[in-house]
Image 1 (spheres, one colour):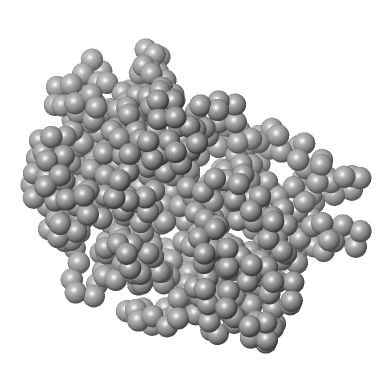
Image 2 (tube, rainbow, N blue to C red):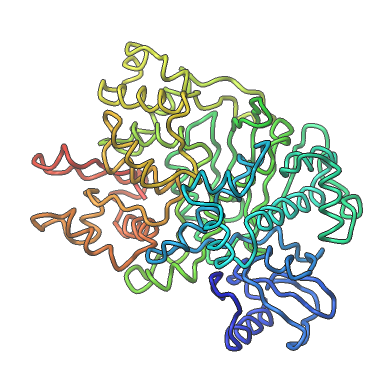
Length: 525
């Protein structure tokens, strides 16, 4: 079912019922089933007894199911489903509606005292009437109904999975008061929040654990290798084992008018297509934001069926690959600059020195994690001598300081809700940042699925256009068949290149001297 469809056809409904009957995780989050005999809506993977076909109604979004009067299932828990993110390169109204939904999905915006349709329309540069019209056409609900469902499902997950106080859950989920939270919960779910109160699973210092769903296939080995080659000690810990896949890191987040610091740990449960996330007590007050960052960092909302339908014929071995995101856009951008024209190992060494010199210490229960990545202000104020002593050349120094200054004053936003074309242009206007770096940041920090570093030398070799007179132009032309999933195509192309040795990360081929100023070497896949 496509979310733009106002009413699914009979054939689409029959297809949804077959997917429901198979309990296929690949359709999780793609649609929800409302059962008229119970008044409850479920995910396709729900383990309850299969309802009769005539009792089923199918919805592209949880918000649409709730607007039709259905309550979320307490067993399969719709709030755990992978998000539905569709991209189009042809429908301008659809793109605008998706951008509005991305802004509403962003927990960083929930702390606003007044979040109205007018404010959202102003942010997008359209009238509120036009926004309401295209949003209703895309999702079948108003923007505020969409936001209300998102807030309620977030609160429902925190109630079921954590021992957080109800007051804290209400505020961190975006409600202005506990009273409004209680009223909304009762009106939508016909239950009080305390009736959904889980036993909680945390003890003092042990953190909070929540579960996040994703759609298979998922190549965990490839993701683990990617992260391990870029691991910065004291900030990150990567264990990409087949039976003990684990990722942990320190994190700093702004929320509620103050800074929160702590750590998180992620482990995958492939049998249940879930990620188990453990978050330290210091980050509990910004837990919705942490969850959102984790979903982006591990690309949990990707839709393999849609991506593979476009890319499988060209890259048949990459169906489980995801585009790794990041936990902090500024950190990713700095590390991208450090990685220009050098190998992954060398870039990791420079990032390690930067953390050791400018990173702040942080207390954690994990002995391997002890520092936070430097703040933008710290790097903006760092002297050239201090950066040079770390082995960072002058061109990279200027790029890092300009980037840090732009982020520190709020002039540059490097998150998933940023305007992609405007942000890419702003990045390229900074000294020392070219198209490759901007596209790489768009791919990983802005979560843009159609980013394409056309000047990448290794990409030219993978696509067999390196001998052409204008390889970048040839790569761009070849990539048109992969839109709007070119970020995934880049990962697949990089992964198709043979390693130079079995023990070291592949180094990057240097561009010919005539093109060296226009291209940069990319991190290994």
